[in-house]
Length: 378
Image 1 (tube, rainbow, N blue to C red):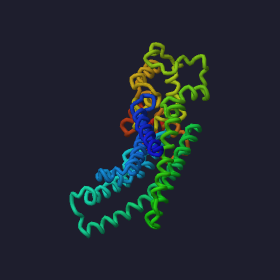
Image 2: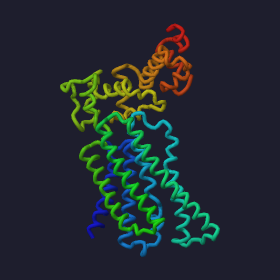
Image 3: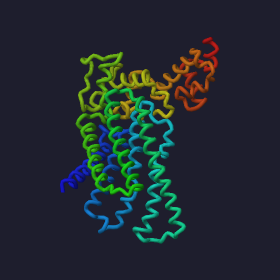
Image 4: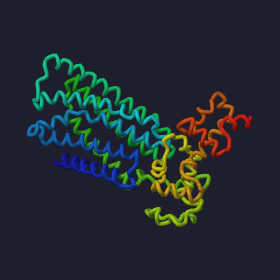
C-alpha cells in the first residue's frame, strides 16, 4: 500500500536523521539534540499509525500500551527546548526543563496503569478506581488543550531573541508546521470525543502530513546545513564590523583545527569569533560558562580553545573571561542607571558566581577591590 510505504520511509528517515544529528560532530549540539528527539517522537507516532493500518494491535495486544501513550505531548516540549537552546542567551534555569515533560509523564503513567488492566490483564481496577481514572483522564484532556497551545505560543514569543534572520525564518516555518498539525490533532480528538466523529481518516491525513516535517527537516538540516554548529562562521566574519578580508581566511572547509595550530595569531578565525561572542553577545554573563560551552559555540575542541587563548593573550581561559566580567562591572559602576545596584549584584549580573570569586578576580585585573575602585572613580 502506497500510504503505508510513505509512512515507513518517513519513519526510517526520521530515525536515521535523528541518529546523524546525535552522532555527527557537524550537527551535534545542545539545541539539535532536542530536534533529534522530536524526529524520534514523530517516528514513533507514525509507527503507531502503521500498526493501526496493519492491524498489529489485534495480533499483539500489548502494542496498545505504546499506542495509548499521548506522544504528541512531547512535540511542543522538544521543539521549545530546541528553540530556546538556539538562542545565544540559552536556558539559564535548566533545572526547570523537566516541567516541559510533566504532562507527558502524567499521561504516560495514567495510560499505562489503565492498560495494565484492560490490555495486559495484570490486575483489575475496582469500580472506585475506574471513576478516579476517569477524572484523571479529564485532567489529561485539560492538559492537552492548555499545555500544548501555551508552549507553542511561548515558543513564538522567544523566537524574537534569535539574531540570525535566516535561521529565524526557517525555525518559524518549522514551528508553524508543527503547531498547525498539533492544533489540527487537538481539534480532531475533541471532535471524536464529544461529537462521536469517526476520526480515523483525519488522523491518517495528519500522519501523512507529519511525514513532511521529517522530509523537510532532512532537507534543511543536511542539504542546506542550517543545523551545522559552525554554519555561520565565515559568513559572520565577512559581514561584521571587524570584517576580515577574504585573503586572510586560510581555513579550508572541513579542515581540522590540528592542521593549523602551529600558526596561531591574533587574526585566528576562532579567536576573532570568540572576541565577538564576548563583545557583542556577552556570553561571559553566563555564570556556568566553561571551555566546553565555548568550544561548542566555536565548533572546536576545548583544548584548542585554551591553546588559542594562552598563545594570543598569555592568559588562561578563566582569567580571559573574568577580564570581560570585570570590565562589565566597571561600566556599571560608571553608569548612573545602575546607581541602585550594590557591587555584589553587579558582579553576579556580569557572570561571577560568588562574592569571593568576584572580589578576587576584580583585584587581580585592576589592582583594587571593587569598593576601592568605586570610591576612586567618583
